[in-house]
Length: 401
Image (tube, rainbow, N blue to C red; front, side, top):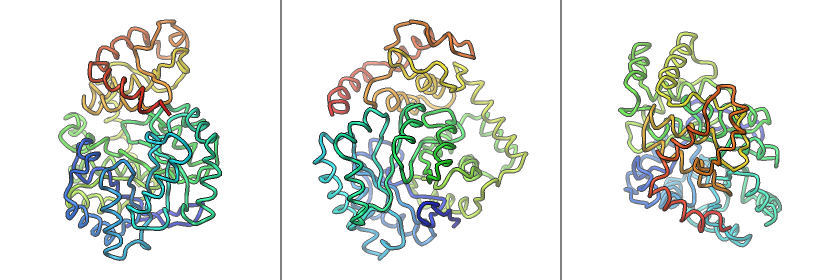
């Protein structure tokens, strides 16, 4: 296994981390229902540790995940050999007392008295952070760190890039976690956010390196898969995606949710050969060709420059267009997930139908995109009855806090 040193505390972190959300399989529903085989999960965790993986990422809302991780680490005496990352469920917190309530539950489930890397789960905007500050989150974190219950304090992010950049400056974070892969360089935090976080000396943990598996298997566009195969038939599409991330010096740990021993073995083998700047000029050309294939499939040629932002009516224009492009270039299901996470799970909604057609955005778009008309198409595509039902529920359960 290859490792990277956390510049803030000297931790030696495996470049491949174990994402514990999908013990139950590839579907999100199984991840949040806890419908998985705990014995199989135990053996996967055991194999991972024995092969050098020492960073395990879980969360309060991953049903059954914290429990099986804690039980396994305790059973095999692995606790002192690994770093546990888990997450405060902000979506459930209603007041300051909830911070201690959920933290105590983490410790109970994980059978430990401290958390190595503790994250605020899905911190999406400055307004939410300011609310947490009003609750005394800074003082709370300082007390936990002084008591040795939290070693490193950070946040995971699913929101607009400008909000991520603002959050980086709002507090002296120990680390952060972002969604990032070669097809998502302008989505959410994006490459700009990655580089800014790294410039602050923060370890950056990467989630969704395979876009929920869409960059690894049959869901990868055939033309893109053929391009990879022509460049090197011995490297799988999944390996290409991981190698692209390991190549970048700003990336610290790449998280992968591995459901089968075969997946674990393949990812370990890739990580064992991981190095910064490992890609040859020819391989970098291959990635450019694959990205061009995706770009040619896109319905709207948005570069994610954010010149159209902020929208006076709150629309997250780049996120809407990213989901729209994902729908046609990769997978409809992944696109629906992107759209909901980017436009609903924030302090304020930011979906396409909020557009009032004022035209301010189009005056600043260097690509001359007909943004107003395109947002109308996005709304028709994504804002179905199911979306409206989710929007109604989110109004009461997410933003009520």
